[in-house]
Every structure is written in structure tokens, then in C-alpha cells.
Length: 163
Length: 212
Image (cartoon, rainbow over all chains, first blue to last red; front, side):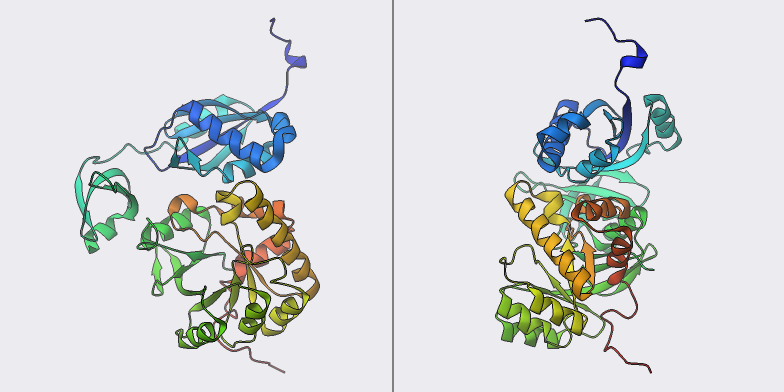
């Protein structure tokens, strides 16, 4: 299939969304299925075909999502309803919308996700033995040690000190 | 205007501490939070107000629980059948009727709407079913919310937009909540007043005084 000339191509927009929990980098295919499910279940098959969402890239804890121009609002609302990905809880927080990937990448450079600090450090929270999974300034995510109930807790550094 | 998220369930009911939720809320554009069972405090510049959620008990026990609640707490009552809702709307000290999407179809009608307006009781529009549920249950919630919105426009009782988040992953930004509310059918002034309702100084902090 030959590439269409620019004037005949579909106009597209790109959405940059932050993936939560921090440090979780899902498989792009799983993320696509989660977003496609959110779009289809909220707006229906007809609207989903018009929105035409696609996961372009997953970089630095962010996802680049492509859609048809004019359907950004519908995509953003659907992203709000994305709650699971690959069987685990996830949230997508929209950061920016642009007509090009390049400008979103510039945006990503201007607000980079800080590097993971102290993963694997032992911590105690409410008499639970935990391991630090992610730490960014005051925010700290810990995972409870154990075979069965490896629950993830979202805390601040003060919470660890208090307990 | 104080933008407030209502009905949060921090640790031990959820997986996030109240400090972390307040930190997230500050980044999401909120000024205050109402958290169930958490003593009032200020964290990261966010005012946290205590909320009490009363539900799944008979009307007599529920009204006793309302009377037992401390001054300054936001008293939220889980909606039941029509008789229960009428009884609870008449109880002094009830601030919010929530869980209307789980109640039966006739639980909130024009009579209860009029009572809510007369007593200044707000009806909670929880965005949690729109975020977490799919299919018929989400459609039911959307139908119910549109019906409540129509009654609110006619009888002028206050509405509250909330996420009822038990995790930071379930919290949504003010912009995202506005977008979901607009999808339900709210217009922008209605969204603003619904987000500001729980945080307004005159709501749920004491008896209404008539100043002539």
C-alpha cells in the first residue's frame, strides 16, 4: 500500500498521559487493550472507530496516545475511566495534547519523572514489614512483604516515620 | 470557592494514607478533602474535614447515629428505599444523601427532592461507578444521575461531585471530574457549584440562620 500524500491523510492528535502507579511500565499492548476497552465501553463501537485510539509509545512512565483530531475530549474522558491494565490497577493522568509527538517529547523533557530512589529499601508501616517500591520527593510507594498479601500502599515519608 | 473531593476512604479502609491523598489532591487542583473516619487536619496545604458515612441500617438507628456524630463532621447517609430517604431527609444534621445510584428506581422522587431542597441536604453524585464500572451498572448510574440532575434543576437542592476514592489511583483531577460531569449533563456553573458545595463555609457546619 502506498503512503498517502499529506493532504489526504487523517488529521491526528497526540495525548501524553502519565501512568500511575509510578514505576509501573505496562506492556504497550496491554495498555492499548485497556484504553480501547475504556473507549468502546463508554462511547460505543461507532464512536470508538471515529476516535481511533492507538498507543504509539510508552516512555519514562508516560504513554503517548494517538487519536483523530476533533475527538480529543472523548478520548480524555475515556482515559479517565481507565482503571485496570494487565490485571492490575492503573490510572492515566493526562499531561498534554499536541499535534506532534515531538512537542510532547519536549514537554516530557521539561518535566521528567525523577529517578527511582531507594527501591528495595526495607520500611515499616503500621507494624507491617514493607519494601520501598518507588520514592519521589515526599511520595513513597511500598509493597508489603509476604507470599500472599503483597499489597501496595501509597504513603508519604512522614507516614513511615510516624509508624 | 473551595474545591473539595468528598467521601475519601484512606488507610485502613483503603491503600493510601491521608497524607498521601492530600498530597495528590493538591497536585490535582483541590483545596480540601472530606475523608471518612479521619480527624480534621491540614496536610500539604489541604484542609481535611471529617466525614461520617451511615448506611445499611434501619432509619431509627441511622437517625441515632446522625445525632451521635460530632459537630463539624460532614454527615453522609447511604440512600435506601423511598421511605428511608424521606425519613433521613427530615433528620436534622444529615448533610448529604449518597449512593443514589445503588438505590431502587423510585427511591428519589419529586417529593424527596422537595424535602432535600427544603432541608438543604445535598445529593452526592459519585463518579466512582463511571470510572470503575462497565456496562449495565454504569448505564444505570448515568440514568439515575441524569434524573437527579433534572430534579435538582427543578427543586434547587445542592449536588456534590465526589470520587469516593480509597486509593490515590482512584482520585481524579478537577478537570477530569468536570469532563465526566459534563458528560452526565452538567453545565459548567453547575459543575463549579457541585465541586465547591462540600467546602463552602455555610454547608454542613451548623444550623442555617436567617438574617433579615
